[in-house]
Image 1 (cartoon, helix red, strand yellow):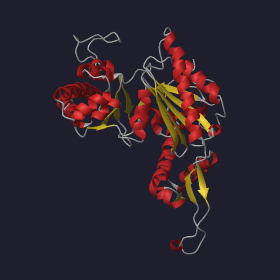
Image 2 (spheres, rainbow, N blue to C red):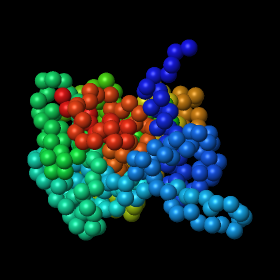
Image 3 (tube, rainbow, N blue to C red):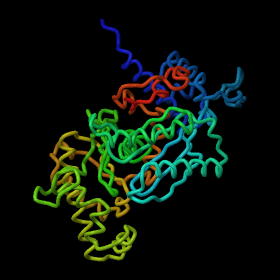
Image 4 (spheres, rainbow, N blue to C red):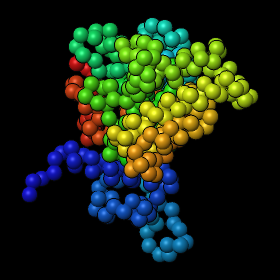
Length: 411
């Protein structure tokens, strides 16, 4: 009988570790016996995982405390997440806003900050803003960046392009190398919408569901796919480009080269143009006040969105669809028409049990996804991203998870 491959064993180990860590996150400090009952792991597997997590500073043992309910015998030692086991920095270098968040290994966010930027702000300036934000939150929250284990950064657009797309590669390299030079730790770069999908699938509206379709409605329209419990990037890093699905072949031209793309109808810029408004908050105010024209625009946007989601769901058959981004603040006035169109156009087997929810994590989602990318908290990331690893930059084997300390996008 063939032996299981190393990737299968790694996935199994990470799945067991995630089950144990999840129990500690939900219930706090637990004894080994309680962990065994809550995780269903065998005694031998449980003890081996706990020892590994203690050795890698992700959990700690608390001093034994006697309990009257235990009667005689040695008091049980408790196991808990180690808040001082290291820090991860997550960044979202978005279209018009930069977000930064720092979390400990217990995935408690210990500091967060954001700052607006112009849509045409050069990438070097965006990086300077991000570095300034990190310095600001480190000072305000009294965080020592000496404990930083890595940085996960989300950027706009694809992170993997054909060899002749020099401008894209330099954009990713500028951010990656600038962060690595400043902090001297591994830096992982991915599309910010895909990182938002990752965060929603771990902590948000898609938590605990193996098949999730995420759509982000912002100045651009994009998405992410979690299928069979794995985050997918696609062969060239372009998975989830829902904004460039054509909803009208005779519609307005799109910068992608197509016509009538969804992004030309449901992005923030498109909504502002249709509503003759200068800012999204003006549109939302009109929507709440019952302005008929604004509601018509949002309803039409929801219907178009629902049709595209239905087509995607007919292909991948998820359990949950999550809609995020700034435009999702329109709430059910946008989502209800999308739900109706989804129900009307999805195959009956696909729509059975299918749910569409607004995102839970708001503007911090992509930065939170960057944190998850660094800490490899979830089995969703087993084998992700599918890119060639560069030489290890720092202590790659200190915890047996060498992927944490490699640059997955260096060519």
